[in-house]
Length: 142
Image 1 (spheres, rainbow, N blue to C red):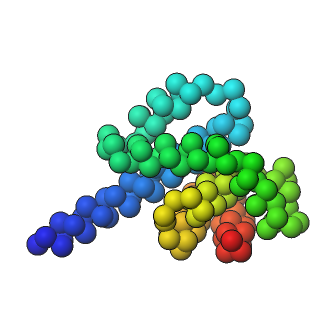
Image 2: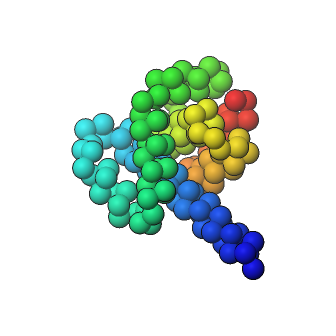
């Protein structure tokens, strides 16, 4: 019984982390499209779109702040790998999925296959028909 309860807890935690990644991706997209976005709006958006669990909010804030802080570094790394695609040529969606995934791979203790899978799911949900293969191809090289 105990392990069954733990599995439900972990399953919920993982789905909440997926939701946190989705919300962070949406905020990164918004920031990319609208750099004058106010921090108050960001907090409000997180509060409205994430469950009221301290751990999930902490995870989302860590991802968002980390990508914002390391954006230039993430962009440089992405540019090195995507030889034929400058960041300016990439769709806003793909560019921000890659930033988020690369940050999580490098600075958060999340296994690489989990990060890639989550990035592919974001690409399926928000990207173009080619996004999934493009994101997978770039992340596979890191």
